[in-house]
Amino acid sequence: MTKFTKYFKYFLLTWILLAVACTGIFAQYYPVPPYMLPGKYSMKHILSNVEPADGIKFANGIINMKEADSLKTEADTVSNKNRIKYLVEKGGNHALKIELENYDNDIVIEVFNLLGKQVLEVYKGQPVREMEYIIQSWKLPNGVYICTIHGKNFRLTGKFIVAR
Image 1 (cartoon, rainbow, N blue to C red):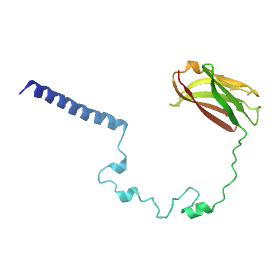
Image 2 (image 1 turned 135 degrees about the vertical axis):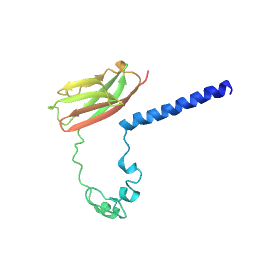
Image 3 (image 1 turned 30 degrees about the vertical axis):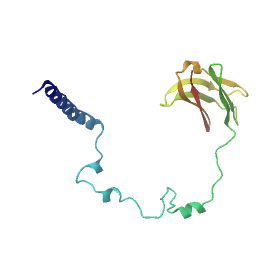
Image 4 (image 1 turned 45 degrees about the vertical axis):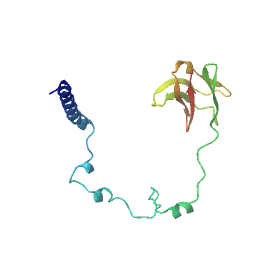
């Protein structure tokens, strides 16, 4: 037996043992769904909730697309008077200007990374008309960020990029 085959056997045996050990470890955290267990369920059991129709059954009871097309679209109840006027880069920071329908209610302006972690709280309190809010993006590493403005009955979002 050559030295290479001896070490290859040890290498292969190590990987097999590691794979077997990891399977047991992952099984306790990620259990197999019951429909994937052998002999317990069949495809017939899994698809038994599907109703035969020429369209999709929606929550409001519509089964085919002809009914959906005949529905009248209702007026949008969301106010379009709240908006981000601009979100631009200015001198190493980003500037945000918003227009609101009601300046009496408190707002919160926050910045999140793409993982959903809050990285900055820009402003919290009563909004000021015609004010430009400064996002201190010089504190942030390069990347894409989501700025959210939320108050009573509204939420606005804007995306900006930090690239140096």
